[in-house]
Length: 193
Image (tube, one colour):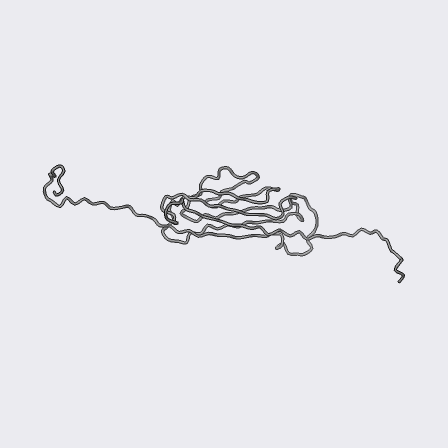
């Protein structure tokens, strides 16, 4: 070879790109009402704070959801003032948030009330953030290619989180009055009956 010789060529190559879902993150933080103890009392309302992030959120190729499971005995509060681009569907005590294209995270707090949770614990609040790649299917971007592999497993990425809480149900107090006398008449300002 002569190092002064060059070769130019043009060609078209078809490249198949295997779409992979980007891994999300998820955190769940459960707090009672902020009273002096750290347990839920019967009838007490506290909060669940959910934070999730999604990597591939700008091109519409992924669908992003966050599912939160509220344990039996707790009632889900109203889901007011959802962040822009976030919708929620409630199914019993569970809620699924869908995060729209262009939104890279969910940061939301909602109320829960201990209506009938049994004493003790743990009572587990659980969640899963899910990113589902749709680029190679008839998804938001239409069909854009074929899968390089035969596994659909890399098209879904999840992150799981949970937080436990305990319940202390305070019983009804008992009050008794003992007059220490058989006399039903008590003198005003007296210290004994």
